[in-house]
Length: 241
Image (cartoon, rainbow, N blue to C red; front, side):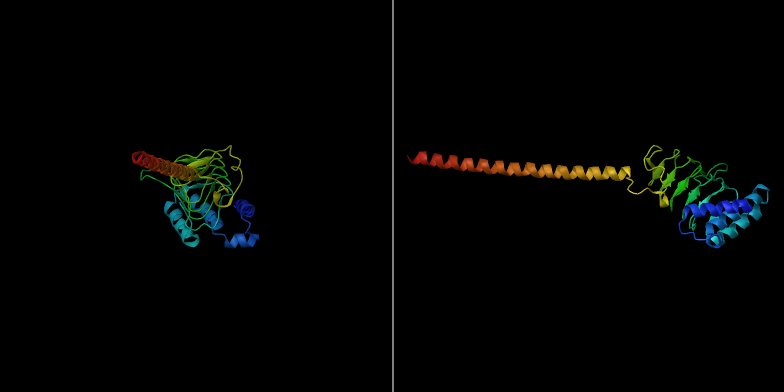
């Protein structure tokens, strides 16, 4: 148990530049408290002490603001940063070295029993407020952007953002391997935003083309009017003669 605690504290130092001392991490990080308490509740749950495990989990939620069902499976060196509002369902599975920010939900989409919560691979990063719903799989090293709602599998090493979650970068992306706070890589373009920007640009080009055509039509109308006026004057002169 103490070895796992040491691993957890060391992983926090690796991923949180605000951590200054072991004592600070041990006493002031609710994510660490919630995960440590979860090991106890999970042991109670798997040894058929279901009510006691659930009640202990409830106390942990009251103390930390993080709700982890005692039936959930959590790997080693998982880091829950800030943690408030995190909800992890009964059949959720979280791989080693995963990072969850505050407001994350690993939820179910059905009332049926059995596997109904997501499975996260190793080294996954889930941004603040993201919702991963249903018995889907998030591949190793994947990133889920802040406030995304993911209801489909995300491949290994990919980055998903938006509502509904969509892949914006695969494992071959140049930025995919970089860690960025809240799981979003800087200057990363959303394909929908790019499409909208393209449409706006195309609309501007159409407006400019229409304005040019209108100007040519006006010039042509003036030219025809001038020719008609000259033709009228010439006709008047011939009539006078």
